Image (cartoon, rainbow, N blue to C red; front, side, top):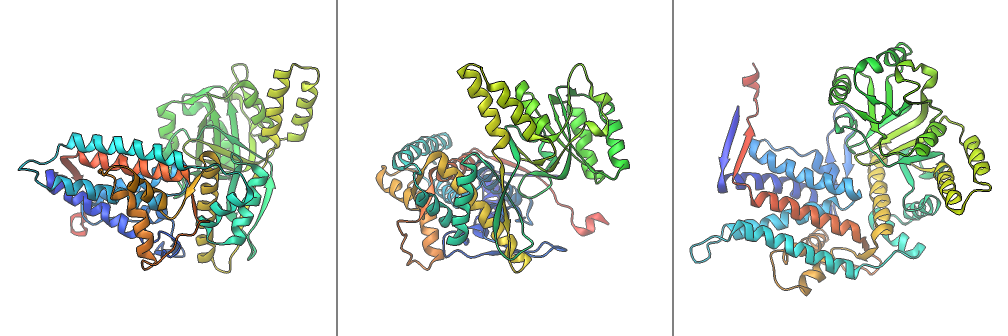
Amino acid sequence: MKLVKLNDQARGLVKNGVNLVADAVKTTLGPEGRNALIDRTPMTPLVTNDGVTIAMHVEAEDEFENIGVHLMKMVAAKTNDEVGDGTTSSTVLAQAIIDEVYGKLNTDLIGKKPSIVSLKNEIEENCTKVITELKKMSTPVKTDEDMLKVAETSMENKEIAKLIVDVFKEVKADGVITIEDSFDYTTTFDIIEGAKLSRGYATPYVMNNNKRECVVEDAHILLTKEVIVNINQIKHIVEELAAKKITNLVILAKDFTPEILNIMIVNKVNSAFQFLPIKNNSFREEELEDLASITGATLFDNQKKVADCILQDLGKAKKVISKMNESYIIDGAGDIKAKVKELEEEKKGGSVYKKDKIQARIANLTGGVAIIKVGATTEVEREYLKHKIEDAVNALRAAMNEGIVPGGGTTLKKISEKLPDNILTNPLKAPYNQIQENAGGKLTIKPNVIDPTKVVRVSLENACSVAKTLITTETTIAIKKEDDKDKK
């Protein structure tokens, strides 16, 4: 059964859901922010101050309020997908902008409410102006000290922040960094062989963790230039894997039909077998050859069909991680050294252009993957540290891409005071005000507290986006929840 609410009643209930998420998340903001304790029965409770993690566990009892909850989850998730940090600030900004807009919608001006279109346009125009000012204030990350400031602002632990900086010095800004549990009490890192791919999963319905990833351990990898059209192409190899109690298959193919993707999704729900489909249609021929070298897979093409694949043709990797826009192959079973030796020979006597192209391939093959192994005395503490380290890694990566600005909410506050009064003037102060409130109103933001420009930008853009969505909403339709007596 579907329920319908209209106009102010609809917006009011949705806003209650917005507030439910924002109020749960915003107490974690800043150095004096608190933690959330999340029940995960039968697993150990989770202690975290990670905004997107908290948001994803919030649910409202009312159907219409729950729509507002899911809109805020979307804000946090989109910010997390784009930069991996700033999810709490994005949530705080979204609530503040929505408060400002609803205040204007509920105010009669000479008997007439403001135009919804004009409010939407005002948000768009001023968001652009704020970002322009933000870029003017941004400075590039130049020194190890700059890197340490970024990592420490997110991490709030100088020793681990230094370790994160050391990791980046090994793998650079676009390098692959993963975070795992340590069997020790200390946090360390290793560099192993691996590769980063410029494509993510072909469907989000294969995700298998709350980080919006699909992670496959001890992965078996099928590499082909073909389109996977129907299950008969791969049925035989899946059956062989299952017979050996192997429960995963990563497929890098030119494309997948909707029918085969649906079969993979249904299979994930109904059995323990995990498919991970990744499109390789944008990869060049040499990239596919290098993937074969990294994983030890046979590359199938128009001459050698997937239908002829046997177990020995599959590549292997210790782990494959796939996100929305990128994937990582970690510790592949192929002979990378032999491939590098072959490329070094090929490079001799070639043109400058050819040498540069080959050198880029060698760099990708030998670049390595950093694994940060997180140690702690208890599982609860280790999970908490993993979230903090992930935020710090993502913040530093963003800072190295677009630079840094003064942190603690001060940058947006300064911009709000610089620009003429507008619909974003008060909301821009919300992160700074919340940090002060969490600290009892007496916190001095030190010069070494800095934020990545990209994190601030993306947080604001996504907050403005959801506010514009709510402004134009006059009708809200929700699916009625079944209560216990309805189910009997």
